Amino acid sequence: MPAAGSGTSTAEWYRHFGTVDAPGSSPCYADWSVHIAGDPELIARIDEWPYNKRQPLLMLAAARFLGAGMSPYAEFRRFLDEHWDEVSRIVLSRATQTNEVGRCATLLPSLAVIAATEGRPLALIEVGASAGLALFPDRYSYEFDDGATVTRVGPHGSGERPEPPVLHCRTSGPVPLPDSLPEVVWRAGIDLNPLDVRNPDDVAWLEALIWPEQEFRRERLRRAIAVAREDPPLLVAGDLNAQLPSLAAQAPADAALVVLHSAVMGYLSADGRAQFRATMQGLARDRGCHWLSNEGETVIFQEDGSSVVPEMDAGRLRGNFLLQHDGRRVAITGPHGQRLDWL
Ligand SMILES: C[S@@+](CC[C@H](N)C(=O)[O-])C[C@H]1O[C@@H](n2cnc3c(N)ncnc32)[C@H](O)[C@@H]1O
Image (cartoon, rainbow, N blue to C red):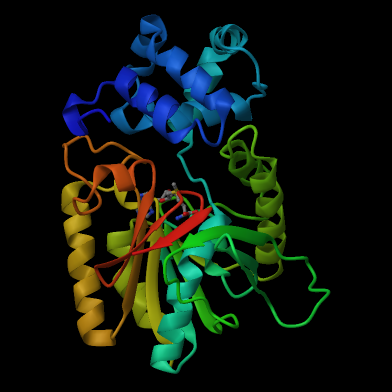
């Protein structure tokens, strides 16, 4: 892995994405990213964008949004040359807002433990919620597979309409799998730019953010969007640090409040993350609020060289996320919710 921070050149970032993040999920993105890393003329163009806009996934999704199909690199490169102004416009006007509903599978066991321990239903706040799809963990179906047994958990009754996505998750270790879904009585999210599940342009962007070969992710995204459209969540536009205290004050007092986030802390500065930690400590003290953090260190390499997760065995975390409950490490998770390795 390249040294994070100011030492991480754009070429290293693309090479890391192409050799660590993408290969298991998208041979196409792996191939394109490794070629881009070795294409100084293109790297120089990408370097004209602000630091956070150089993120490989954002550039690749912009090209896909504009119609780039899976192809050998030479063809993709021609597409970029022909559409560069539009790619730049999308990169500069959009952000990486992948709303990965699969991550609910890695959060569900912790949410169920919280509801059972508290003996109360849940009130959820997601910071960095994108379209808010992770706010419906009680409406989806799950299949947890430890290699020997498949445990299914889902909404009561059959014939749910709309049909919920089925989230498959490979597990290891003593995962506290629930028998049933926890009850959620209130849900709300904060995002700099909330995406609207009823807006076709936002939905097209959410689909473009999914890696080319992963049709199963597009399918579960569509199902989750259909679920969310039935009952769109309250999404507040703004910075999570500015909005969280007043939103938390609106949560029903008789529910167990949980603040959760996935793939968000990388977008904050070290100061922003410190402020968020302080707010969470205050909410834990004053409100008994729980905190579920599901973050990976290389979603965005930190420009200042800091890391979004506590130091741990690099081999274990490589390309994965760390799930923490109230600051305690509980699991290593697949970045799209495909694995849950309980610690
Ligand atoms: C990679 S997406 C992840 C979305 C969602 N958490 C998920 O896991 O599916 C990161 C989201 O965080 C939001 N975000 C980044 N910085 C933020 C901030 N300071 N305040 C609120 N939202 C922020 C972005 O707009 C984006 O929607």
